[in-house]
Length: 172
Image 1: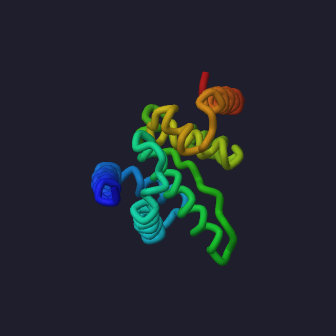
Image 2: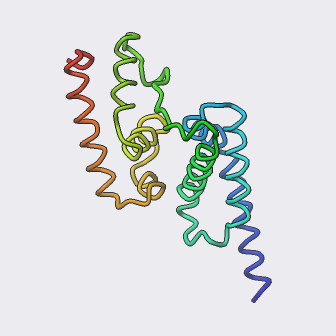
Image 3: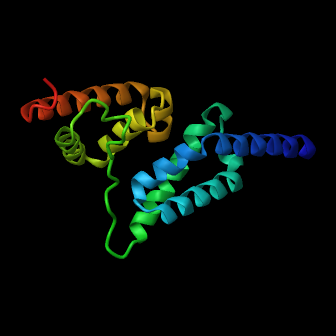
């Protein structure tokens, strides 16, 4: 009985390590989007990796391993922000090169400003969907929200951003 459980944990650990290797760049980008510092982002990824491996038996469904890992990563990043002396900085959802193709610098700045006007949950949803290109089901798992809530929230956020940006003539 104990041997079987030990083998399952070893298999899960191997799958977790493989997942981490496969998505290490994405994990780094998510961490960096919160902490805005290369060294802190690397520390966050390392801490999240450690916590995931140590607590792997708490994962109930292997199908949700990636969502579970990203949730741990976000929690570690938020912990780093809380510990900073100058107070926690809100994660800035940046507009990367892939997101601003065909947009001029002023339009990108307007979009960035509009995103900064969102609350923290809305920023996370936008970041995970449009900058990390995660599936809605993965976002629901990471954010610990029902899938329908994620869909409706994203729809409302995008609608709000379109209205705000139309006022400054970004989307016409």
